[in-house]
Image (cartoon, rainbow, N blue to C red):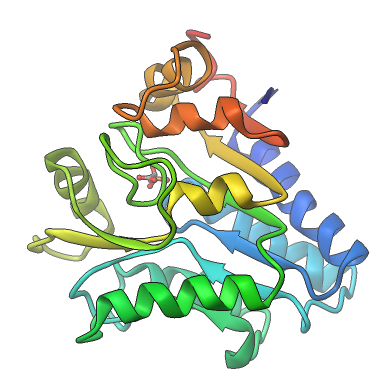
Length: 240
Ligand code: PGA
């Protein structure tokens, strides 16, 4: 695992977007998994900007969504689906058949998990996965204590995730479960990049990079990824 420190959030976002652009240029039908949230927003904006400016054909690229809040409709502005459509798919006119997101309203969530696992397998696996990190060290909704070998699964959310997660929604919302790609997917991906910015993330980044790997702090698994990177701005790197 390699740590790269950028001057600020914009430089971090631009560089992360470049990773996607480089991959799509080399492999137009790449399988890219992106996280939603505040951290990847700049990355999505830069991907959209660069694809348009450089007139890159991104139409063959496959997009996998990392996770979703169970029970939250995709129209809700706090859903992961809304984030992707609003910040990436609509600006780039990505067609529906290239977008693979969990249906968090499904009556058969285990079936949704199997469906996602099969899609990833059929497409030849994930080429690049870009994830954020939660204040409890989660990646996606892989909460502390999660089995590192899991593929897609449904999980009960931690108190921290439920509290912090309110920030995405217009009003208070009851959150209890998440549907997520597993850390097995992260480890199987050809390349994995964890991104974080801001002083609030300094402690979790220090733990990710320096602490012995243990499933009580899921993000530590990045240390084990053969082509794993942690991209941070100076603030998030401030206690490394
Ligand atoms: P954030 O979320 O990018 O909004 O900080 C990170 C996460 O919880 O994975």
